[in-house]
Length: 85
Image 1 (cartoon, helix red, strand yellow):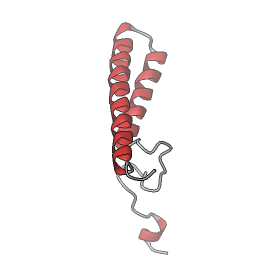
Image 2: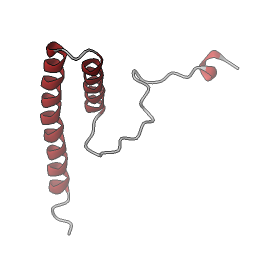
Image 3: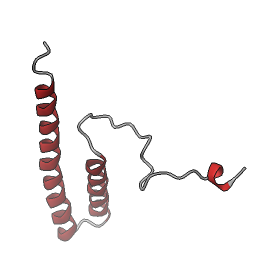
């Protein structure tokens, strides 16, 4: 058994075979979601004002970006299929 078969190369974050649950979710959004979760866990472990502000700002920014990504995806889908009833 060679080294390459025992330890196959994967992508940067090991998610190339990963199936996203939402069609509009991108890997960048998924990474941002994980960062948001880390900030939340950090806030729960040490609940101070600085951690709360970091988490709240990141959560709000992530939410606006996620909503825009979802809206853009569905707009493109409707445009792509507007001739097909």
